Length: 278
Image (cartoon, rainbow, N blue to C red; front, top):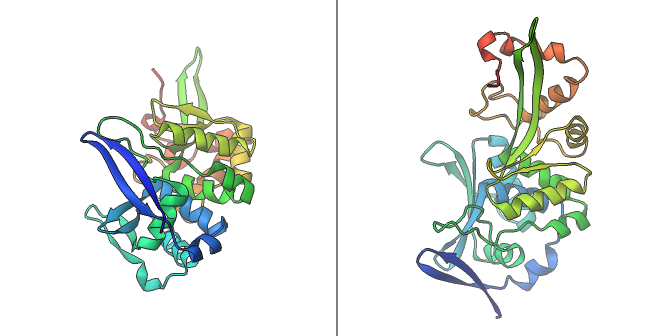
């Protein structure tokens, strides 16, 4: 059996892993499809693949039960697994998790797509992670991948801001769709995928994010990609926690027609809730 060497830098020197090629059955039967695209979108955001003895641990963790169940269902369908192979549970800090231990599946994923580690090594060097941009675009499933990725590590900033005017406060709405990603190369890959949908994106390295900010681009994102249903904003959201991301997006788009209705939402009526730029 042929082997592929995957080499990664760390502070201790060169770490070399020997990766066996996946079986002929997996290589022949697995082609990019809807479920694999969704699975990869989740794995590249809140998942990882790590060595476990002579096998691999495929792991996904998130607070959303919807995303956990979707990850499990995609793994079962893509790799023809018995449901019992997907171990469900909770992490020590209260996140939900789904885990599969498999040498053959791990070999396939790592040999086909490379590393899924998105955080830099301790010495600051980024990993060689990259998205399968061409394969996703050629297959027609790039929107499914992006929808899963944005549902996992993406979010929305949507709230009123104001400043003092000569006679009255001047108000406007902050509207931003973002995806958090510290890896500079992956941010470029996400931008290239979004550009294929004619969506313009701003790369913000200082924040570790890409941002969609104009009316036309936000509308295109809503129409062509969007968020998965029943995936809620997290506790990090001041105004929208536990509110479904897709519904926030719909409100954001509709706010262009009558912004005053948004200013007067109960969640924004307190004066100290309105952001006042310095």
